[in-house]
Image 1 (cartoon, rainbow, N blue to C red):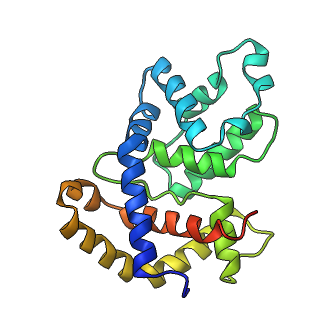
Image 2 (image 1 turned 45 degrees about the vertical axis):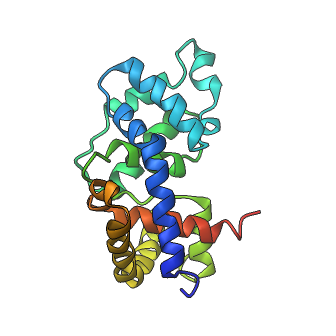
Image 3 (image 1 turned 180 degrees about the horizontal axis):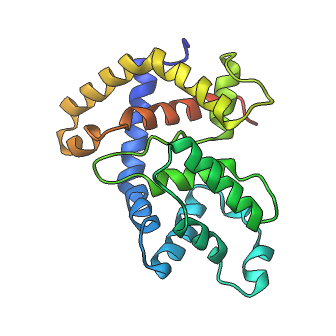
Length: 208
């Protein structure tokens, strides 16, 4: 756990606030739109940013004469967002896999679920599943190579409980330094996203 410090968490918080204001806030709004054309356009833009477009092979949408991501749009519009966050991710992954060739979509599903459940005053409590975060948790001895999403959540939450107080201190300091961002800095679940980016940063050193 010594890789996590006030300085590294502050850098993670800064990175998140910058990227959320740059485009992620708009992605969340677009992904939750009830207008099909807006949703489709947002998926193209957001998936390119999050590097998950390649997961969705063309032969399963445009190759069948459909608009890009059209099958996914139907899945999203049918998704039950009243479930707990883990169930939302797992249900989304299962339904995507059925339509897009039985591939692995856990990382993509978690990122999509995060955008679908984040709004202006409350960030989602979805834990984004990412290969870098997995590497970070493995380096801490908290996650095996053969794991499920719920195993990942257990390991993730273990780190969060140990770092929660320090993360809150970082956020409090940022409120004092960056009052113009107070709405984002006081939004619920910001602490979760800060740890997401911290684990990403740690894990990036292990993924070649």
